[in-house]
Amino acid sequence: MKLQQLRYIWEVAHHDLNVSATAQSLYTSQPGISKQIRLLEDELGVEIFSRSGKHLTRITPAGEAILQTTGEILRKVESIKQVAQEFSNDKKGSLSLATTHTQARYLLPKVIANFIEGYPEVALHMHQGTPMQISEMAADGTVDFAIATEAMELFSDLIMMPCYEWNRAIVVPKDHPLCQLSELTLEEVAKHPIVTYVFGFTGRSKLDEAFMVRGLVPRIVFTAADADVIKTYVRLGLGVGIIAKMAYDEELDKDLVALDASKLFQPSITKIGFRRGTFIRGFMYEFIESFAPHLSRHMVEEAYSCTSKLELDELFENITLPVY
Image (cartoon, rainbow, N blue to C red; front, top):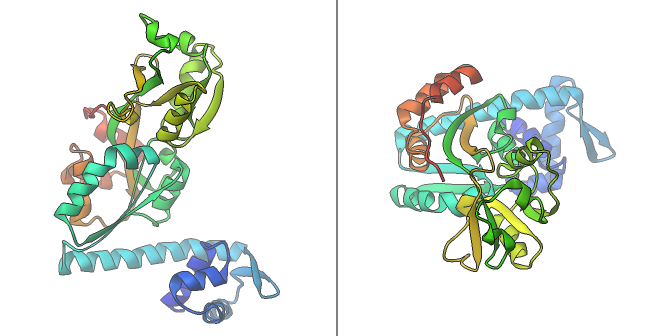
């Protein structure tokens, strides 16, 4: 059994069983990958992939179990490389993040700019996706850190640490009736068509919960994953927008009015998470602290040592989070 063979079956499984696409991504030949997979299966005495002619059709039950262990092995190999790099050159390496549009567009730019200035030899890679995709990427080791508000609690392998608290704003054109109210209420908001986030994005669950508790059924006419898209459709008169307050830019969005909705909805908490067992390099600790100053290296190491979600929650229960 060779490490290269394990890499091949892992990559094939993560390229929708497309050996040709896998070969292109690994800069090798399709026949070479197919041959090595067959050799590995012959050695193990089981099929990892079912086939129809020359095409792989699905992962077998034995293959599923083998791939799970393969992922753990490849992550350990990557950790070994990270350890070596930390001792050979602690200023050089790579850092990969997975996050949503809201974080990438509004909270991370300054943090990333400062990080790149301090660590010019660290290659930084950002992936965007749904909160579920983001969490999966961190859980399977595709990225070092996941930054999101939703879905991360579904993955027990992730160590999640709270970064900041945020709430929402109602964005409307300047002449909108909601601007004339002395007090903004959910009942008044529910009278209008609503443009907001897709379910599962940017604290959407808190929004739905607030209306449900009041016995209201909001008329949501358009949803998007991107706050800038939501604001575009508010400008077109499609409805009132409900977005993260941080996504309102006083200069770029001066044609719109942002009404504070923090009294209407429970605040949401954005967290940063990484897979349990990840080797955290020095510059990775610094990135976390630059994004969330209360997450010092000492605090992250304490979180790393927690063995349960309850213990992790207790660690952060008295922390005062920044509010956006």
